[in-house]
Length: 90
Image 1 (spheres, helix red, strand yellow):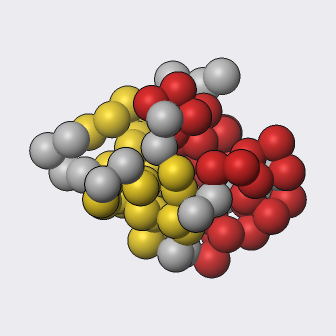
Image 2 (cartoon, rainbow, N blue to C red):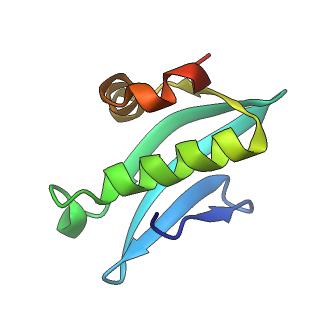
Image 3 (spheres, helix red, strand yellow):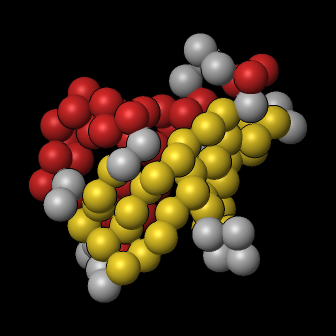
C-alpha cells in the first residue's frame, strides 16, 4: 500500500508521488467518512495515483471501523469497481 497521510489540519488524506500531490478531502461525522472531493496533480493523472490514494483511504477507514459516504464521482466509481470495499459504503 502507498503511504497515505491524514492531514487533519486540512481535513484531507494525502499521497505524495514523484513530488506531486493526490488528495481526498473528507469530513468525519459519527463514524462515517464523507468524501466530497478527490484530486490528483495533473502530472499524476492516468498513472494510478488516485486509485492508490483511494485504496489507502478505504483501507484506513476499514481499520478504523468507519463507514464511507462517497460524494465525489471518482470515489463512487472507485468503490463500485472494487467490490472488496463494498461493505464500507453507507
